[in-house]
Image (cartoon, rainbow, N blue to C red):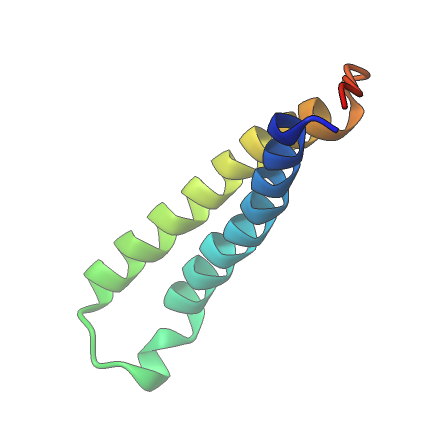
Length: 79
């Protein structure tokens, strides 16, 4: 079993959760934070849009990581 491949797979799964976090936090800041926090609206919108765009970027990077880690066909079974 290749430990490097297991680490890549774990990193890919963790990246999925981070994408959900970035997009969720961006949506929260854009639409729901004004009811809970007393923040300046411009800062809240800039942070929300930035997190949302970064989450969208991370979707593509994570997709590439998952396809390389799980579906590359390079399964080295060196015991």
